[in-house]
Length: 130
Image (tube, rainbow, N blue to C red; front, side, top):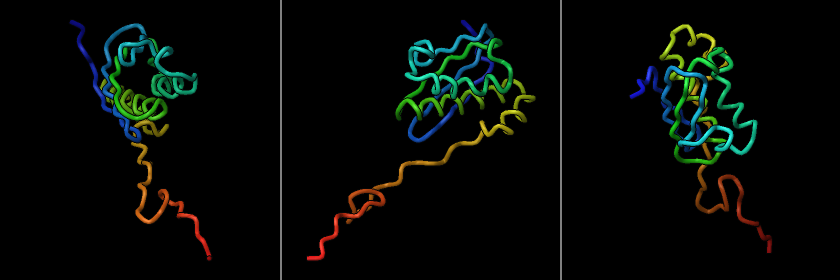
């Protein structure tokens, strides 16, 4: 059994990612798939790998991620947040560089709710003068 040396939970919009960091060679698995086959665009892959690049630990650890909810962009943000938290737990010296790049901060922007008497969150029903 491989021992997890760090764990982190990341959230973005409605996506939640549970991240497990292990000693290894830099393999990234998202929901039992390789990261390149799970995420559709290279930008999403880059968002997920950003904490590893900032801490220069992209080849030191194997990372296993379980992510649920939301769309692919929200999931990518949740994975990045979870990896950041796990890396900060593994090595305290990572905390300063992750914090400076804003990777430990939860992005609090959520979808605004639809209001009654309106078509959407901000959009009103069409006004008719007569």
